[in-house]
Length: 274
Ligand code: SAH
Image 1 (cartoon, protein in one colour):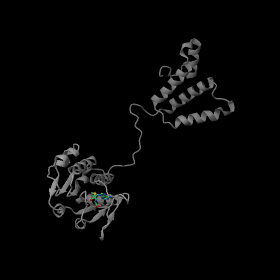
Image 2: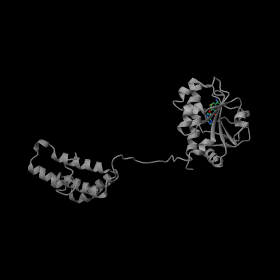
Image 3: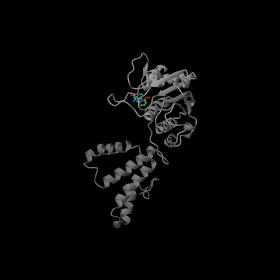
Image 4: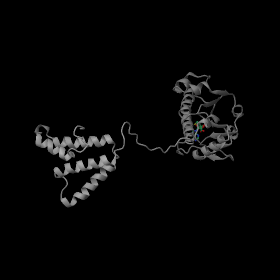
């Protein structure tokens, strides 16, 4: 699914919500994931509600568009499919969906332009069996069985976030490197040669028979770091700075030696990049 339009076919229904804050945080959670249709059934306090508006943190779009009904029956009139949400086992023959199966079902329904309702219960007592009987299926969020009841808006966010997966991948893995690019192999190899000449000169690559393995390990170490072009320049600057140390002993000989180690007059001059 590559459009967000299907979200227009989904509504969140809060049955007899008691706290304006929970209505507000529900609106916020919904808009965070691109859902705008909020319905209230007989809220305890007056509507519109200042606490709800404040807690919605700018989700005014959702708050201002909220519809209010007297009963769940009235609100469900125009829907073709309704989920109720509860973690309490009910003694009734009705399908119970986990989050993944729920969103598969939502996909099937909304793809055919059907209207889907997600029904949530009141803070203190949840949904009544009668209210659940008006719905097609139950969604259970698999919480800790010894402490299973979620805050209302948190229950909403878990469900709308799951549905959001239908058009957004949740398995993103990337490493943004603004203003720089992965180093080219040629620059990396020049850096390795530079480093190895410096390590040779300082007596690190000994004994001789171990040198090939040591060199290989060092190259692998840096290859694993996915260096950027700028990082390679910085590393070459670091080598030069260390070779100059202590800087008050700089003379022509030393300057010449550092240049040779850096690659003499090859086109990659990094003496100034420290
Ligand atoms: N004390 C109530 C629960 C109230 S929590 C009870 O015992 O039923 C408020 C609402 O959040 C619930 O009515 C339900 O819609 C939703 N909710 C909370 N935890 C949930 C869970 N683990 N699974 C599904 N819905 C949940």
